[in-house]
Length: 287
Image (cartoon, rainbow, N blue to C red; front, side):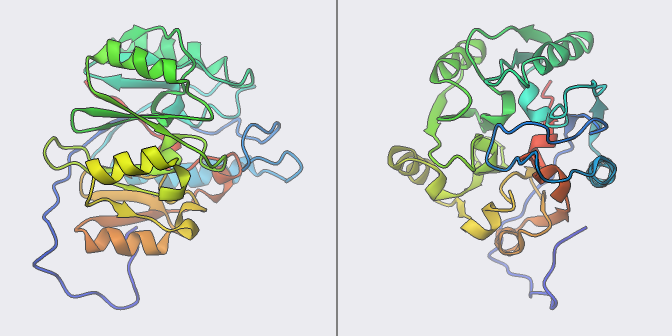
């Protein structure tokens, strides 16, 4: 559903026109979701986890994508891999080439071959990684450029590797706040169209050099406040017009409307207990 204020704001002629583009995405139903270990600050195995609620919330996101005309593919969830629901971490895909993941923590490492096998079965050319990386959690495509996160999970060596695989410019961004341990928790791609690149991000999540680089490259970016980032509001997915975000990220929704987007809120509060949100559940498959 759209996130709106109590009163409709008047239309503004200054708001840019946004064009949606249907996406193909991979998702994994959280049938085995649980928090049984701690590999990020969001996780606390001592708190109760409701797997059935996680599935119901995930189903809302799935239905929203289908309603937007997305081609949603599903990978079979495997018992013993509670974080497999965070499909974005399974690979990075551009032009039918899938750069596979190599997880930093042993608890998640068995996910990587499962995602590589699925991608091969769907006809993608799969590149096995040499360097530690966590897929689209730390690699985001904006126009022709790959933004690449490091500091907590993916290594800087994986940035060089992904540049070799795709032959594209790669900009390294260093994350410094452990609550935003993947790039896609601190930065959202709103429009990835070459020539119309637009992003949103949380400045304090990055070191000084990365903040300067982002400010220079994307001067019109939306700067999101800490309250919205704290509910993983930036862990969002956009088709260029509709931006699916955490339903509690209310000011971010307002900022999106001011920039000509339609903000669509979903409640993934149960999956937030594992440190993931909308984008974590969504791996884009770019043919």
